Structures are given as structure tokens and as C-alpha cells.
Image (cartoon, rainbow, N blue to C red; front, side):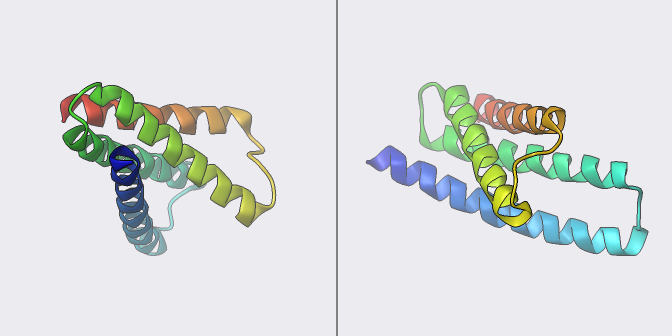
Length: 117
């Protein structure tokens, strides 16, 4: 039960960091008005950083197999982002390649965060 609470806390913190980072990114986008490819890259960068922080946090809490816990937080983050995307856009990813890349970035960010914690 303690592990579930720790994971839930990390997920809530990841959501808060994600919200703050994406709001800040939106402000920057309003000023710069970059191309769509730059916007997509920036969003993926936010995903990686958020999962890196999540992996660091879960690695500090879980003292064994930290990288696996980081992978788990990355997978869970991707699932949450996918569910939110499904609700907002009323459908799953149109571009499967983009979904796979996003999933792998989330997993890699969490795993690296867990490994360096």
C-alpha cells in the first residue's frame, strides 16, 4: 500500500509539473509563434523532462530496481496523457508513429531519472 501511495504522489507531482511547464511553454509560443514542428518538439521535451523528474523522485522513494520504477512512472504518465488526449480529441492517436515515439520518450525519461536517482 505504501508503494501505491508513493507512486500516486509522484504522478500528481508529475501532473503539476507538466501543467506548469506546458503553461510556460504556451506563453513562450504566444510570443515567438514558431512552426508546428518546433511546437511538437517542445512538447516532447516537456514530456521527457517531466518523466525524468518523476523517475528521480520515485527512485529516491524506492531503493531497489529504481530504473524499473522509473519505467513504470513513464508508462503511467503516457497512459494518463493518452486518456486525456482521447477525452479531448474524442479519439486515439491518428499518427501511430508519433504515439510510439511519445511512449518511448516517456519511458526513457522515467528510466533515466530512476537510474540517476
